[in-house]
Length: 291
Picture 1 (tube, rainbow, N blue to C red):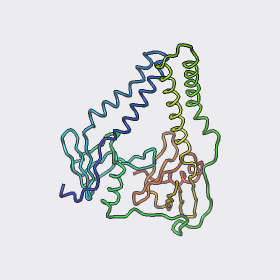
Picture 2 (cartoon, rainbow, N blue to C red; picture 1 turned 120 degrees about the horizontal axis):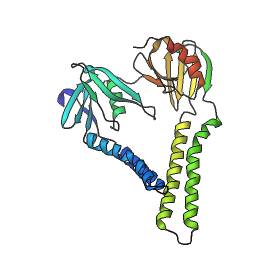
Picture 3 (cartoon, one colour; picture 1 turned 180 degrees about the horizontal axis):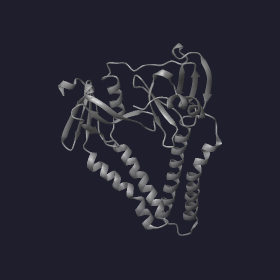
Picture 4 (cartoon, rainbow, N blue to C red; picture 1 turned 90 degrees about the vertical axis):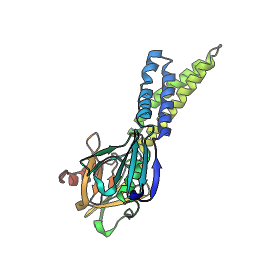
């Protein structure tokens, strides 16, 4: 649309994620069919959820422009300029990227919601924050004078307790290996049984790798407490925040502090594995009135 300026990107439903979910469901149902066919049938319930997403959101199209965006859903095109956004539902994904899941406009409170597996929601959030790339995102460097002198530095503790989470995939892997041995050890081997057992091994290994990535994804995070604020390092990114810059915050489902938002709208995600976040940052946040 000409009134929204230059087109920046186009996005549709993330069919790759749905295909991966379908494949994982199929492998899981195949493994459970060894126990009973009814158990395998219950495991296929996510297939219905994926089908519902494809039916309801399969033809959605999100187009991000310099001055706003459009969403085509069920043949209806909704357009919104950046200045028309009254409030936004911003959520943080497992990859620590912020995504815009829904917006409420100034036009009589109209709400534009995006599908759960819609692609480009992180690009939409960045475009909204930078007004289509006109405003460069703020860059932060560690240990600046703006947050005062450094008082203490904390890292994620190395805990063997995290590895207990791998007990479940490890148990599943033992069962899968037992199935492989049982299928290969009999004189009249059935190729179908061997294929099922090998699929179970693959599923257990993939499940274990996923859990390990989730558990140890923040192992190198660092929290620096300064006189007038804090600095947080995740991977190669360092963000600084003064105590008086904190405008909003979010909790984990377990009740701990998950992230804080600065006055400029920048969100800083904090690791749940750092106890000092709850001990040193959370008390400061609790003094703030919720918007």
